[in-house]
Amino acid sequence: RLNPEGKVRALSAMRRFAGLAEGMGISPLSAVATAAVREAEDGAEFCETIERETGIRIFIIDGEEEARLSAQGVLLGWPGSYGLVCDIGGSSMELASLDDGKVGKRLTSALGPLKLMEIKGGRKAVKAYIRETMEDLHARMGKPTGMRLFLVGGSWRAIARIDMDRREYPLAVLHEYRMTSRQVTATREYIKKSDPEDLRNRLGLSKERSILVPHASLVLASLVRTFKPKDIAISSYGIREGMLFEEMPQALRERDPLIEACHFAEQKDARLPGFGDLLYGFVSPLFPRADWQKRRLIHAACLLHDVSWRAHPDYRAEMSFENTTRANLGGLKHRERIFLGLALLHRYKNKREGTHFEALFELLDETEAREAEVLGKALRFGAMLWLGIETPPGELKWRPRKKTLELILSPKAERLFGEVAEARFTSLATALEAEAVVRSPT
Image 1 (cartoon, rainbow, N blue to C red):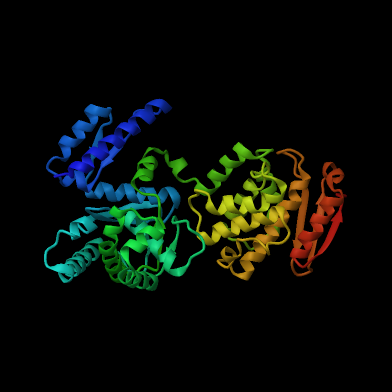
Image 2 (cartoon, rainbow, N blue to C red; image 1 turned 90 degrees about the vertical axis):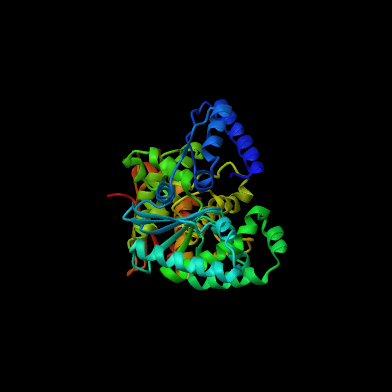
């Protein structure tokens, strides 16, 4: 049966959600219940109570549907992804395969930490049950080892937070945080040796969540040992985002979540919405070897180049970096967050030394940091040549072998190329270790 106190808390929360939805004009809400409710003998009765009290109808979904929705949540942040999604709740654990952006086989199991706490026979019996269940899941899933593993669920996020603490990781953003198999093993040992109360207080974990962590860490260790993933990514997107994905037409599903978010930010906050796309075309010749992943970052930086203009000039560089690296963005790895933030820092500031972000810069290698600087200085220069959203300011020609950066100004842009613009163009050429050449169109 459902926990009586939990039922009271859940009903109170649902009343609040119903009130918020009514006030915002977004009723009706879609709601689902997972393992705890579907396995409880009073689960259906409780859903009826919620509908009677709040008007919200709850659909009780089975384990395979839970796995499908979780996997779709991952796709909302990473369109076209492939690999294995593992969603853990209190009472169950689900697996779903992703192939070329589509959800494949789905499996469910009773490997939720609350279920494991009910097993008699102590730690040895729990570990044996986990191992046998995981081996069965692996055999039934029929997937090769060495795939990317996406982790969905509060217990996985708690373990990731502990892993960050153990590593003294400088960026406290859980979404797209990466772990290796060795790091999982090291963090499991770290959890065993740490005082639970100290971890909970220091990392801000709830008491209910911290109780589940030891058993969840056993499951994760077995999962990694059995499926041998090539890398492990934490996803803050799960069932909720999967339900949103369900409502989207295919054309919307296939859009890049990073570029969509940046377009939205530009429309909302930039002084000249639409200039970002023009700027992207202007600076792209500086990066002739950029692959599609780097090009989307360059595009994103162009769209965001002016969204922090309302900040005080003395703080625009730092605020641009802070806002970008902490933003609630999907489809963005941590290294990519730092790259994007550093480029926007250089949009307003020539040098990055002396800021309190230097520990974060270490997540990039020297080549990436240099590319971010070049991009930022290109944005800094390009911003001087605003002619509207339909008139290109000119053309950049970058010749790496000759070490020359040539600027061909459009007739309308010539009058914008004043003293400050010239200094910024020279700074860009210096970042490329190139000679600056300026000429008018023939």
